[in-house]
Length: 294
Picture 1: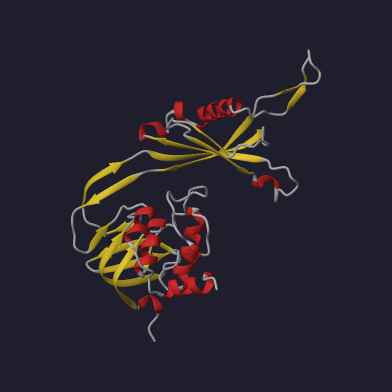
Picture 2: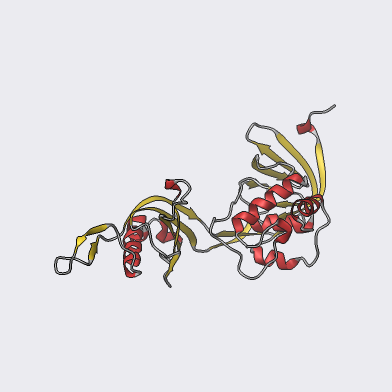
């Protein structure tokens, strides 16, 4: 019997990509999906609009949770032939090779590739043009003073620190005592030339966020009583500490036409609207068994 990595599989069409858009396309179209790097959605992102995800056992539309459920369903349904182990994809003629971290090799013959994510993929046609949009920046902060308040988020109309999200800190274990202490993450959208500019650094983000917290009435630790009215407490300003900055570039490559490739750039909401019927696949049968209500 030949070794598994010596066998060549044939699929009429293969989806390439690991974003929520690619996984939704793979699920609804009942096509196999291969990808190099898992593109897990931001944990606080939700789909814009009203969508029914009861087929995944969900009432809300949190992108990360939907992504996790789809990964599980596609894996159990055999639509992720390389799982999440692929480190590089190479294409020659109508053959695709997927190399894993332990040098295993998956071989696939295809007629068409539907590509949502070209990262780590070699053998694509020449790039005709490239669109570079604003990078999405996540600045994560620990709150050292001013953790307890009623705010879930703060919003501005600026690209730099457009939104601040407060969430229960994981530095205190499971917070069930009635006290909810919060850390925060700030979201910005910056042009590439501003990403490494000090005026838009995490240091400047710290100053801006602290002022936003003060303006919202968030206070730091107590600082004794007022000298003129002992019934009134004084408070320090909030204090935050930068932990990590994540930069996600927004680059779209547009390639020379080639009948072997179909490049798609739809966002998840647009992918959902492409399909009007339930898929007939092992993955959909699995979700029916797992999540279908009586």
